[in-house]
Length: 253
Image (cartoon, rainbow, N blue to C red; front, side, top):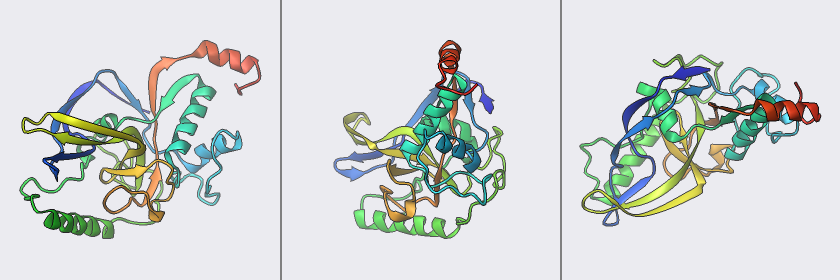
């Protein structure tokens, strides 16, 4: 685990933003992490996920038995949350997926908001679509397709491994469409929790039941290469409930 002290940082809000029906840059905001953020140093591995599958608490998706120490991939949002629920029951601690803000805070200088340059004139929808395609196609060509061992993509300034690797990570944040007024306020907002924010080399949005991005489900842009996850551990725990469940035979010690 890596424990990050509370703090504030500036970033662009996730989601889709329009003004007068035209796409615009997401607004800048100051996000505050009010409590110590305890987050896994690396992504959940295949061997770690396998324990949950063997306990029949997680879906037995394609487990790579030949490479148990590589990051677990081909997981959808439900797989990730099922693992978090199982780990919470096993340990008596509260585990969950990070929010988009928490992930961005932990990623620090490796956080990529997936924006076009500030200088780009997006008033022409056709030019904007071409610019998005060119950016995504060029970026996709540079991403290594094969998974690499945990730690192969290095450590960021907060001590987290593989933040900018080829495994994208589920967050708990829902996708939202926002209509801005001339003052920059939100006049209308539609939240779709069937689509979640996914973070990695860049931010994107994935339909929550998709396990393999190559088969579709990416809301916009070039799909991620692999889908995995890392979890946050909250300070709240329930040791008494855990002990009772162990005594009742519902959990292992």
